[in-house]
Amino acid sequence: MDRGLVTEMKDAAETEGARRATGVSAEGATVGGSADPEVVEKAKRRRFSPEYRLRLVRAADACKGPGEIGALLRREGLFSSQLSTWRRQREEGALEGLRARKRGPKPKAVDPRVRKLEKENARLVRKLKKADAIIAFQKKVHELLGIPLKPFESEEDD
Image (cartoon, rainbow, N blue to C red):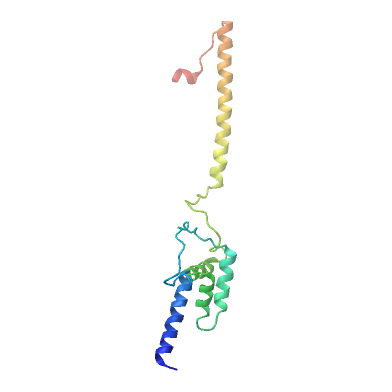
């Protein structure tokens, strides 16, 4: 075959592959073709489930031949950096690294003794409010009946 023809066929195959990778079809790339003037909405960010990530990492690990991983990534529409990240996450802790994580600050661990003391403190505050209400009621009853109250020692010190 003629070298010029072979080179031209290679160029055509490479540009066809590039068109497919970018999502432009061969028909849409022609000079006379009419492109759709409508603006498409912004694409939403893809989210991958932990099961999908783990399945893909296993499939990539099973690839032995040259170029198989690249073909797998192209078929799935992924980048090699995503595969690297998912492999690292798998090594850090199988599914823990692949599980969806909640964003934001992590809750602080509370000591059970602190929780117990807070509960008792709340109970004592409620008890004190009841005692204050009873004392206020007794004072009003003594005023109405005209009985003088003896001051407590603690009240004299204040």
